[in-house]
Image (cartoon, rainbow, N blue to C red):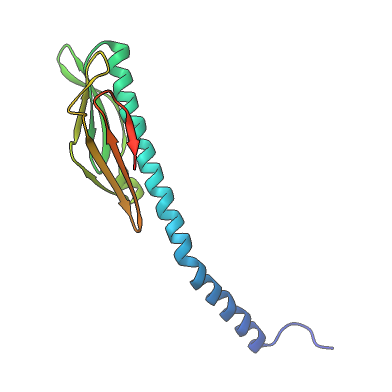
Length: 142
């Protein structure tokens, strides 16, 4: 009676596992790229909403700085711009950023100044997300 597997049988099984992994890996990489781009787009959309709401709720000016390494919200105070909120930008997800207007400001009424038609393009691998903002703070995803 024979116990265990021969070296040839183990080599064949390992070769099949390797072949299946090679075939499945590109599709998994595309999934990871899509997840990273979706996360970065969601964070930018949230930052725009928070900046607009901060301006309206506090009846002051608020601005969002959009940079590859960080998203920063500042509020106009007695002594100038004061930091309110900051978190890592798309670069933290290995997502590249192209933005037409790096600073989006909102007034006390929630109307944006320099927000009209700001376009943000996020890209990683084969995945791309394009966001545009309107003057009233709406964000559209293309």
